[in-house]
Length: 439
Image (cartoon, rainbow, N blue to C red; front, side, top):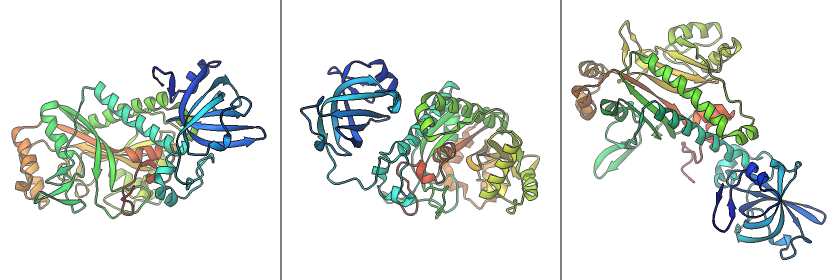
C-alpha cells in the first residue's frame, strides 16, 4: 500500500483495510460495477490488485448522486471503513462522497462485472486493453510477475549475474530461416532468436549469468502453444561436470520459484484456483527410452522429436505413477539440436541436451554446450555453416571457455500451464503471433 501525505490510499490490501476499520479514508480507484438495490447501491471499486465493495446511500452521501457514476469511471472516494463478512475480502466502504476524476468516452465493449469474462479468445484479443481490466484476466500476470521475480531471486542467490543482451544481432543463434530480418543502417540484421551466444560469451568472465528478455521466432505457427515474440528465462553456468548440473539447478530454481508464487500471490491463486505444484526429484528419461515407452502408449511416431501428443502421454504416465507433473527428457538426436550443443562422447548421434515437460508441455530446452574451439568449428562445418560468419562467437571459444551449459524457459508457457490456461495468448499481455501486431 502507498500512503501519501494527504492520506489518500492507493491499492490497499484487504488486511490493511480491515486493520483500519472504523476510520474514514480516501481511496483512488476505478468503478468496476454498480448494483442498485432499492434505496442503496453497491459500488464495486477496482484498484490495481483488488476489488473493494463500497456502499452508496443518499442519506449518508447527500452531496453526490448515484447517476453521476458509471462503470469505468476513475474516482476519488471518501468513506468510513467497516468490517462486513458478506462483502468480498470482508470489508466495505460506506461512501461519504466521491469525485469523478475521468470517465470513458463510450460504453465498454465487454462486461467486466461477470465473475468470468464471457468472451471468446478472438474477442479478448480484439479488445485486449479492456479484457485485461477483468480481475481474472489480470491475475494471470500477477502470477507471471511472481514467476519472473522468483526466478531472478533464486539466480541472484546462486551467484549468477543478471545480463541484458542485444535483441538486434548480426547472426542467428539457432540457425535456420526462422528469423525476422531487418535493415540495420544498410547492414543485414535479425531479431534475436535467443541470447544463447551472448550467454556463452559472458560465462567467460562472469562464470554464471541469467537474463529475462524477449525472444523472437519468425515461424508460421498458429497453435495454442506458440508465439512469435515471447519472454525467455535464460541462464548459463560455467565449470559444470555435465548437463546434470544444469538440470539440478533448474529443479532447485523451480522449487524456489513455486514457493515464491505461493507466498506472494495468494489472492490470485485463490481467484484462479491455481494448483501450485510441489516439486521433489524430477523423473528423467532418455529420448530413445521415451520413444520406446511412447510406442506402448500409442505415440512415438516421430523418431527425432516429441510431438505435442507425446508430451501429454509422458506427463500422464508419470503423473499416474505419482511422480509429479514435471519430467526431463534427455539425449535428443544430434540432428534435431543446434550447432552449439555438445554431442554425447559415448554416442555421437545423441546430444547432451534435455527438455523439461510440465503438465504435458515442453517449457524448457537446455543442455551442455561445446566449449572446445576445434570441436565447435568441426560441428559448424559438418552442418554446412561457415565459421567465418560467426567470428565473434568462435573468437570466444578461441580465447577459452570453461565447460558450461544452460537453458531457456518460455515464461508464457510456464504461466499457461501453471494457471491452467488453454491458449498461450491468454498468458501474454499483448500477444505477437501471425495474426496480431496491435495493440
